[in-house]
Image 1 (cartoon, rainbow, N blue to C red):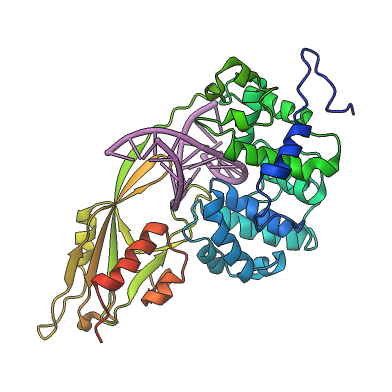
Image 2: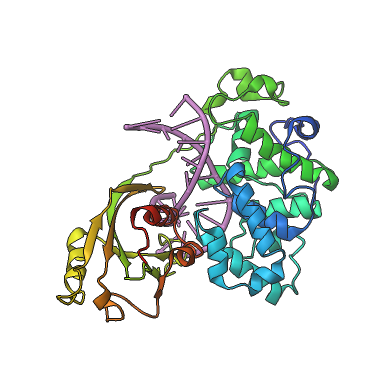
Amino acid sequence: MPAPSSSSASARLPAIAPPLIDWQVRHGRNHLPWQHTQDPYRVWLSEIMLQQTQVTTVLDYYQRFIQALPDVASLAAAPADQVMALWSGLGYYSRARNLHRCAQAVMAEHGGQFPRNAATLASLPGIGRTTAAAIAAFCFQERAAILDANVKRVLTRVLAFSGDLAQAQQEKALWALAEQLLPEAGADMPRYTQALMDLGATVCTPRQPVCRQCPLQWQCRAQQAGNPQDYPVKTRKLRRSSQAWWLLFLRDAQGRYWLERRPAQGGANAIWAGLFSPLVYPGEADLARMLAALPQASQASPAQQRHDLPVVLHVLTHRDLFLHPVVVQLAPATDGCAVPDIHPAAGAWCTGPQALALGLPAPVRKLMLSFEELFPLVK
DNA sequence: AACACGGGGGT
DNA sequence: ACCCCAGTGTT
């Protein structure tokens, strides 16, 4: 196999590795909790958490996760509900389900040891090409290229790569260039990989890049042309939609709430899949129909009380969810009665502390925290 | 090749 | 108030 650093047929590529590595030593991020370890479990966990999520958000989640489940064996053996609870609020919950599946695959199919090369790593659930390469580079010094959004930005600017990354052919071409730019020595891979990530996050930012602080400024074709902000080129058409969800928080006489597990069907494509939530209805009429079917309180007991809370806007990638929270306090006489739409196998009556220990979507968690003030427990 | 999936940051 | 950011799996 020819050395990837050899020049291409048409143009010689700039040698970016030496200045990047030198820059990372002095200006990169070198004190994150998942650095200075070659434990693939910790590197893997951090990389999954860092997908679509910023470092400052990940820090707390990472520490709690490692403390609760310090190695791949404990994660594989943990109940799925514990994994989801540890992920609660981080978003993209398919990451957590794949994380769990991946740990179990490492135990069952790889003897409890992570594969030591990127190609095998990429065959595991939730580990794609970039995450596999990052783990292999950081832990095993493999010469494997990453191409996440930060790196796409850095490389397209340095090379003035103007191909449309929405086209698979152009993306493939950039992958090939990323591999040709790798340092020759595997020992340089951890710092080189970290340098690309750090540069994209702190200097070569999407808007207003700080080119005067960039170690590649003398080689960067976009900087020389004065238009780094024009890269990367990606045509996209994101059509957004809106949807109303009516959330029914049933509250029994003891102040407990009914929470049900949402089905995990559809794998990655189901909102809040596998998490716990109150009853969800597409419209107010559906919710009202359910309430009308509730067991009626006796004359001696107070009637059920309904509290409609202000609408909460929950923004997803391409959908706005308008959440209409409704808290219904059930009369004591209805305790233990059969309630329509409630599926005993799927949920449970939970006290506040019990509920907050579950895997809850962030807006549901916030709402339930506010309930403690709005509807104090009456003893 | 298009789409779905949460949550947070900056201006 | 409205802009932006993003990797993997499914379809």
